[in-house]
Length: 419
Image (tube, rainbow, N blue to C red; front, side, top):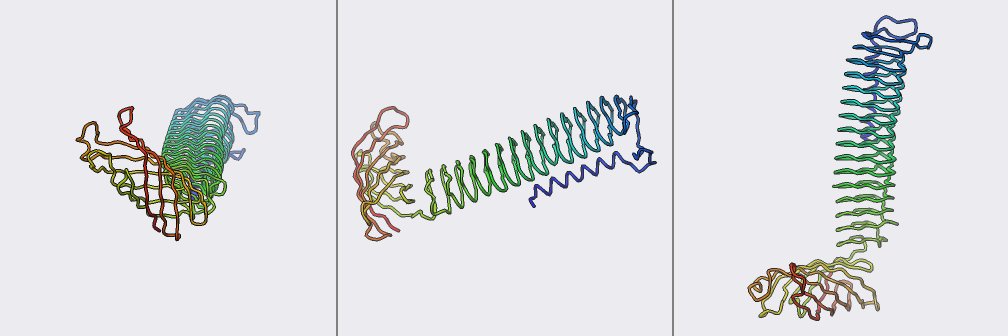
């Protein structure tokens, strides 16, 4: 049983005990079976109804079997069975069973069973079973099932399912499932399923499956993702939907897709990873050392997958200015296909950031430049852990702050791959 489930049931049990203690003090029993309690109010009552029903109530403290009309109390009001209509109290409105209509209190609205309509409280709205309609509270809305619109400064808690819109400053919690929209400043948590939208400043959790959209600033968690996860980091055991983030992690990715800076999967069959770095059991990590007419020496790490690869590296770069060297850092991405058992052909493109070093003192050479380099690569692998390659392409070197190019020329490069 989830921590969310324990917490929600403890709060519901505490609310039920509170309602029972307030409405049923141990005093003399009346013929109708109700306990006599303090009643400091003026009432208009329909005694023909069983139990007698209060139509109009005005006072400090009221205590009646049923309310079906208007109630106004400076301190609190207790309805042993049902409360329907409009009720306003300085501290609390307590209803033993069902409450319907509009209930407003400075502290709390509590119903032992179901609540329908509008509930507004300075601190908390509590319903033992179903809370349906529109709830507003400073601290929290708590019910077995929440549906409609629940707005709180801190928490919305459902002991079972939640539907509609839950809006809170800190967190929304549903012990089982949520259908609709959850919006919170920190976290949204559903013990089982999410169908709809979870939007949080920090974290969204679906205990079993996300079938909608999880959108968070920090992270999204689910055992199974069949919808969309969008956050700085996303984790799921089984991804059949989409993960979009800086870091995406999935143990199994059968029909899903990962799009981000770093994509990780333990599924050897995964082929739908799109990012700067894509890692899975098929990934082959290589060390690449090369030299060419622009790159005097380059050292890079290559992450090679089934049909694609990415590289990150750096080296010594020449700008053709008095043979002074510059430094470069680059990222490259490419696609390859085998021509024979040990021969591959590839097409890739690279982005170079160039620090000019001493060249910046030469005419028209700034402190830093960037270059774009597409190329074709032919690779031969005598063994799985060693290869040689030759590459040719074109390079455009450009200013960061100007619209025209610093220079452009054809490129040629040879190198080796290790491991």
